[in-house]
Length: 152
Image 1: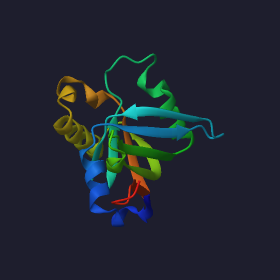
Image 2: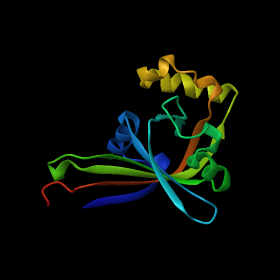
Image 3: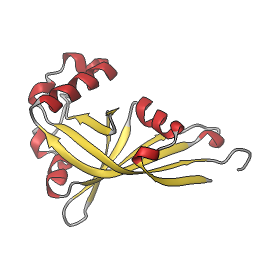
Image 4: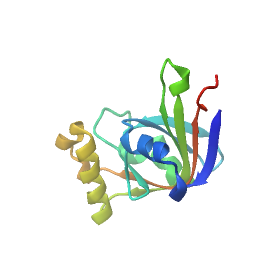
């Protein structure tokens, strides 16, 4: 097993590649009292920041009432897991990003995040994301793991 905890600026090339190229991640948030929630998200990694849209896929409530949004407003500490599963367990790997999140609702950074997300996900090209919140994550630490070569 090979696991390293590093500041984000020293993330290994394979870990940075995984975070940049992955199509899905799992975002963990919690209430101020520590009640956790984990949801799969689409995201983009740019300039050491993560952005994720609250898109137009059907939701049970309005964007601002979603548990992940309420949790971030109560407790900005988040964890994001980006992983790759293969039946060949020598090819398993993951990166956990620990950081803080905020909600963008307008402005230059909000618009830039939408542009980046639309480049990565064709589904976003026709969605009205300008009226919707964007989750902004500032990773502070990265925990990267992959098997050591030649070991089970």
